[in-house]
Length: 254
Image (cartoon, rainbow, N blue to C red; front, side):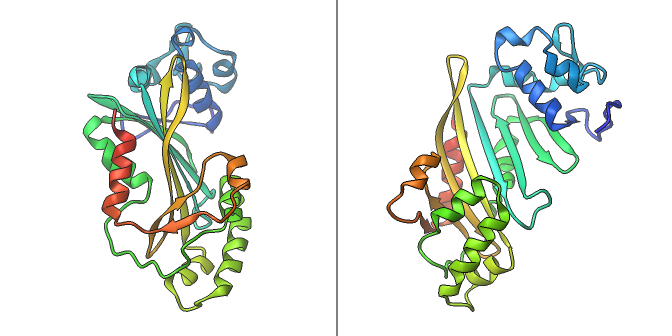
C-alpha cells in the first residue's frame, strides 16, 4: 500500500500493511515502548499516515488500539485453505471490556477494528468458520501428521497432496473424499495467549478440519517437534458444534 491517508468506511477501523501492523504491535508490546517511536514505525510510513509520532501511537491508531494495553489475554486464529485468496487468513482478538480490539489480515492489508466486548464471541465464531449446521463425518478417524505439518508451514499444495493420497483408501463417494479432492477444506487453529510479566505465553488451543459438511477437531500438539515424533497420526473427531462453541468460549474467558 502507498503512504496515502487511510480511507475507511468506519471511524473505528484502520487498514495498514503487514509491515506497518508489525510496527504498531511492537509499539504497544510493553509500557516502555508505548511512549516512543521505533525505527520500524519511521521506515514503514506510519508517521506520514498520522498513526505514529514522537510520543508513540497517534491519531486513529492511538484511539483504536488503546484497549490492547489493558488486555491480559489475546486469541490468535489462523485459517489456512487452498480455496482462499492468499491461502492464509490471520485474526487476533484482544477481549477487553467495554471495548475490544480485533485484527484480521486480508488481501488489501491488515485491519484493526475496535468493537463492543459483547461482539467478540460472534466475531471469534466468524473467524473460526464456526456456524450452525449438520455434521457428516464419513471420513477416517484420523488425519495424517504430514498434512498438519504442511498446513502449519502454509504449504497448501503439500497438504492437498497428502489429502489426495488419503482419500484413495476410500470410500470415494463419501462427502469427506469429495470435499478433500475438490479443495473445499480449511484448517482453523485457535490459540489463547496469556500475559505473564511482559511476554505472551501460549495457553489453551484447539484445531479443526472444516469442510462443507464437517467441523471436526484435530487432536494434535502445537509443538512442531512433538508433532513430528507422534507414534500415530492425530485423531480426527466431530463433536457437536455446540461443544466446539464451548471450547471457543473457554478461550475467551478472562
